[in-house]
Image: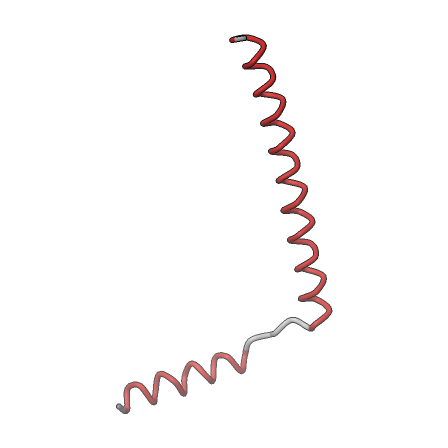
Length: 60
């Protein structure tokens, strides 16, 4: 039981040292992740469509 208590105390001590982001930073980074994910998804969709058209014309 003392090992668990020591672990929790040390973990809590380490969490106090963490530099947590501000609410604005979290919002900005979340928007950035969504925008980049959408752009990559769009890029993959366009490439998939182009390659499928090429293969269809070659086989077709």
